[in-house]
Amino acid sequence: MKRILLRWAAPLIGGVVALLLIFLLYGSLDFWKFLEVLRSANPVWIVVLAVTILLEQFLNGWKWRQILHDVKSVGTLRLTGALLAGYGANVLVPLGISPLVRAWIIARLEQLKMATVLTTTVISRFVDGVVFALFAGVLAMSGRVPQVEGNLELGLSVAGALNIAVFGGLLWAMFRFRALFATDGPAVCRLFDWLAKRMRGDGRELRRALCSGVVWPRDAMRRAAVFLGAVAAKLTAATHFVWAGLAVGVVLTPWDYIFLMVFAGFIMVLGRFVRIPGSFIFGAGFALQMLDVPPETALLMILFNYIMSIILVVGFGLIVLWQSGIDIHRARLASEAVDAGI
Image (tube, rainbow, N blue to C red):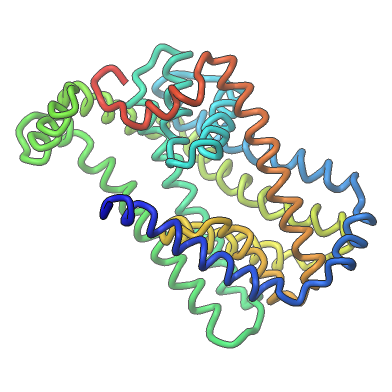
């Protein structure tokens, strides 16, 4: 009974917090005005929004291709499909298994070890964290942050600095201790092998497979392309609110769209830690409120982004999963698989 209470306590508290945030943000929403704005929305810009959502994932796939290239050259479309499949599986089975699913698909299709591919996805994610932090720092230094009660610029600066410290530090540690982790001597390696054995895996082979994925492109152009892809993907993500806003007649400044991306992104990450469902909706809602966008219009902009992302990610993701011969049940089991063959 105690275990059940502990398991459901965080989601329950997160749900209560979510309801309170909904009331704070949209308690005064005029439903009839909301429907009126919805009826007058321009579908052309919603189609453009859908295209840019897919374009963002394509750019992420291209960036991943540059990192993975020295392990094996894999097509951008295949990697993009794996990204969508991972996100789609995570929407349907919210256990944080998207990196495992995308690594499983690529390893299966390209005859690679899953642990090796998984490490390259981790590197890609850490690069995203560093680039995202740089956007936050540039935004704070530009002075184009909405003037609200409290020092929002300082908050963004601190959050960005922490992001760079965490993700940059993790990247440094991966490459600094890669060779050490592949050996059998250190205590941490022996502990890892013991844990792997308890889970019926070969710790030595798993460590070596993981270290094989700690790669950085040898070609200078590809190294630059990793960061170029990450920056291009973030800029494309920032345009999502451009198209959603144009659909309902809202036009903001370029810096406002960067602010929306950064603020909503930080809230979304924070929401994952404290288990608040729909954290993107609240983060974007608070940001649009700071930009004086009417609540009815703001909610539509957010819903266009959120619903189109879910439809496209789940739709294309499930197609890729089906073509790869991987169903959702097996994807869930993958989150528990830790052995030398992955």
